Each structure stands twice: as structure tokens, then as C-alpha cells.
Length: 95
Image 1 (tube, rainbow, N blue to C red):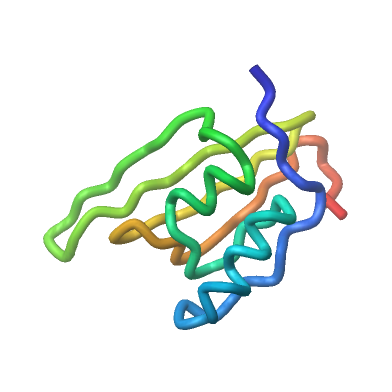
Image 2: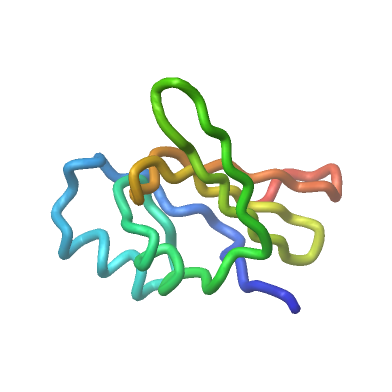
């Protein structure tokens, strides 16, 4: 099953961003720092997989999305996106 991943990453938002603005980004299919897990699912659908890292200071979940050779990762801590990264396995950066 292919999960849609927008070709352009949204500009990360401040973790304290207006919830309305984060919801608008989710409705546009973009993920931004500060979003809740449910907003990420609204924007991108269910992740292909979830990897968890538990340390003394808490747990971070890595949500993995793939499309046409491009990978996108959302890192959630305490149910909120803290960072986003992308990887293109085609050898050229995603636009």
C-alpha cells in the first residue's frame, strides 16, 4: 500500500503555533512541527511503520512514510511532532 507523501515538505511550525494554523496545514496534506499524532494521520494517513526509541528522558516515535523512492519521517515526542526529515533514495533531492 502506497502512502501519499507530498513532494514538498511544509515549513516547520513553532511548537507553540496556533492550533488553527496547524490544523489548516494538516488539511492541506502537510506535516509541521507541533502537530498532534491525529493531525499527522489526517495529513498523510497511517504510517507505513512506527519505530520507537525509549531512553531515560522519554520515548520518541519515528513515523515512516514512503512514496516513489522518497522517504519521509516524523519524530513524535509526547504525541507531538518535534522534527521532520526526508530522504530521497533516487540520488536527487526531492523538490
